[in-house]
Length: 180
Image (cartoon, rainbow, N blue to C red; front, side, top):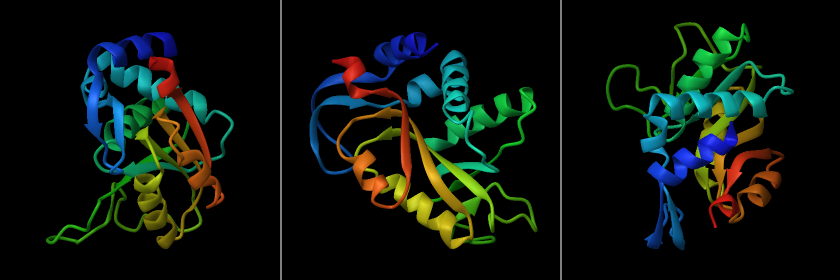
């Protein structure tokens, strides 16, 4: 399964060259997983890989920061339902909407709360861990408990160590080393 996912990412979502990442770091490897996520097979494989990585985790919710985590958690939620696993999903906006409910956390029904809930965070590509920490902080402020992050691809550039400093385990489906 991860071999096929790796093939799809290599074909659709991987490039070499001179790139500046969201973290500000320079890299000769670039991963944009959206083209793979938007392919039905890619969405399915990512959702399946994510569920495999959390099979031993006791979690009530899976969440992540917009935009990269949203397709992953949507695919995972559908597969969790199919497998009779009760695992709800939500996402965190980078900044609260300026209209309507002005929500930072989306996907919860009226009266639904993260308070006291166990949360796994999802990420598409992890570099330093800064982006997913933003989502974790929002979930923690809403009363949720997060001790696990699952990423489709870890670039191996410090995220594991950064997250560990916050008491969070990082599990990766693939790493940058799988593409070099």
